[in-house]
Image (cartoon, rainbow, N blue to C red; front, side):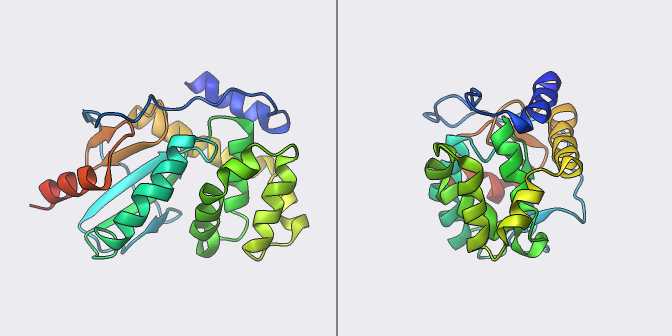
Length: 211
């Protein structure tokens, strides 16, 4: 996986035709595996309250169809339930699986932490459009405009090698310290789940942790 992440960094300027590695079909709830709790950083962005008793850390790739499904189908239920009720906060961490995902991750950071989650939501909602576009960078820049970013700002971010290094470093923490191998991966407390959790599954797990 470390070699794959290095390849992703190298593919930032050549992503056409890159195969997207994703989790297996989300048919059954995966069993959790023990890991260490994720160390939280001041740089993290999250949905929910900082004072929530349960923390979930999501490692995701913006080109991953299963990640899109999680954000468009599961997240709305969590926002209405656990997150909205102040029981859970969900921290988002980048784990790009190809060069286009790396550039999209860079775009989310262009507007600063206050706009990052809004851009993430826009990207997941419109993923089939920009991911399959003949000119995906232009499509991404257009999404940046919806978030209030100038096109030249968006394009500069999507060429920022320093930002790429930060994103890859974040992904490597997931890989080396927490065993992340596919996306989406959720770490709830000290347990890693390799995708496929429903809102109901997450509620059950969070309730057990909160007891």
